[in-house]
Image (tube, rainbow, N blue to C red; front, side):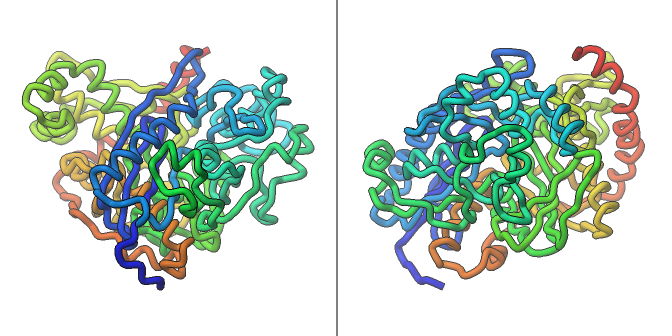
Length: 502
């Protein structure tokens, strides 16, 4: 282990709703953090785009903030790395300039292309997968497709802005058109789809140094020219690192805009229904099994912004965090929310059900329900979804999950953590700085790349638990019948979802 006293790491988590930057010491302890938000662009009903220049602006602003608040000199930054949203599709020219907005992981326009790939190639892809989006681009924007020098994911664009090198890492590549066994872009798939293989960037390991901060990037961010840049990984693999769940059999729960449950496993699993994925992690010798739910704390955010303006006004007057007020309302409502059920499939769903057309609903709404009941029902609905996922994981692997290392902004809420524990029957272990676990995971990825640590697995011991909540048998029994109704709701409503979305 390299002993670098007085040295620090800076890392970024470029998410769907904003970018977070952190400065950590070499043990992953956070010294400073900053967040800048941006929005999705919905030009058409199924489109979900972002302006990549907004990502870069957010990186610049957050960098300056964390340097200022930490009082740490850029001279003492040992390296830079990244976590980022995955499944994006961004065509750029030879100078790295975007040719159009990025089609994010939430974009559903390529349903027809996904169906064609499934029927003609045999790959189980959805409209959210990049290979379907690339085919859409080729068919609908041929000039842009032909002009594209490279097709990048979100993280790859930010790496380019720092280094002027076109690279991606193994975790992001395997979600596109990658032959995992050969560890190279799939010549066969690219040939079938008539996609020039040289449109994809070079693939490296997440811990690999991919360049140094350029003069231009240094000028814009305030960081030191020549600082090593480590590639980093997608948000999901970085979260595995940041949650302390790298070793075999360890599971973690993420509750952010989206949510997921992930488990470190010894082999690759395949689901014909496409509800889950198995991918190589930051440690390329280990597999991670993941079930992603597309909508988690974004459901609370939606409700707050549209139906709880009074809470926002109260928060502005009192100086309190609006989510503290939301927690207070939810805590006063009895478990089960008077049998009110919320289905959190606000923008389609990937797991536990695979349906791009599924949508959210309140079931059992009556005049006896208040705003507080709706808030708690949303929290419970997300937790029901996670319980369903956990049951599928245990059935699939034969492994019993007793506890979940828990991360994401949603897990700052002790009220919601207790709801997760009571509904799932699992111990919820919330790590320190849960909302920054992705960025901290990226920082520790850099630490391995810089030889501060020899192995990715060594990082598990560095990440402390901030608090733990245990399931309460009384409430678990209350939730059981409501959970069964929650599962039944999908089969009853799926036909309506599809007919209304045509």
